[in-house]
Amino acid sequence: MSDAGERKGRPQRGAAVAAFGGAVALAVWLSPGRQSEPKVSNRPTGPDASMPAMPPPDLLAATADNTTIVVEAAEARAANAALPIMPGALEPAPAFVGPDDPATRLRAETCLAQAIYYEAGFESERGRRAVAQVVLNRVRHPAYARGVCDVVYQRIGPTCQFTFACDGALARVPVPAVWDRALREAREALAGRVEKSVGMATHYHADYVYPAWAPRLEKVAAIGQHLFYRWPQGWGRRAAFTARYAGVEPGVVPLPAATETGSAEDALASASGTSAEIQPRRSDNDAGYVDVSKGWRPSIADLESEAAAEAPSAPQLKSP
Image (cartoon, rainbow, N blue to C red; front, side, top):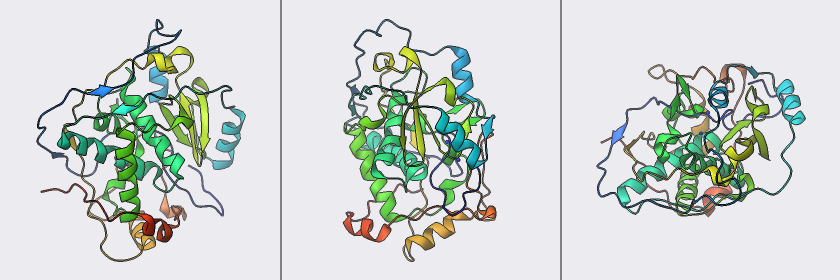
């Protein structure tokens, strides 16, 4: 489903508006292999089952247009605070079961891990899993693409649906322990783990921006720096999620090789800049881009303790 205002005394983390698309690296096309029958427990049930699943065209267009955004942090927070979270219990998303084919599963895991890492890598566990849940919810809503990678790198017109796919983030060196954690959480989500705290959410944005579409959707959760939304009325209910996962993941964008030496802080410091060879490519609606020229810096989690608890680094996909 991707980052404005200066934050005094508090570093910025994560991406701002859930919106994803193209990338700075060349795509790696992997052999599709045998495609098994996709299995997803997402049969619509309940009183809304007869309601059209697709939101009206004007609402779809509004959520794809993030050009009207409050960019000052104080203004954005005030506007966000004035928009209440919907009362009542959330419908949990159905468990997602990915394809059995190992190559296809690896592609899906990698794309979902990229979304977790670059959108919410330094958020809490619940915040990271919530971003993964938004991706999988989109896969099963008829308004979006039918594959994990297709959702993560989907464009609606000229707009990337997730900022990291367009802002040059993929040129940055990932922190190995944080990447391993994102990959593990992606695998668990694709194996059926559900993050119930966001229900059937299909959108989110950071708390320091206020997209024009926010009041047209239903806010369902605030987790860390991200605010989560579902489609309004029946379009955001579980019964409307009638699309079935296609079970096809044609290709992924590779991550750069993990750093072999240096601290996590060093890796993030180098990630904050952009090389002369690779300039950031930003979507038109990218109001929340972390502009390091203004002194903004990503927050550094307690990587030492987290790394100690992690399993050995899993290999990343690389260009041949």
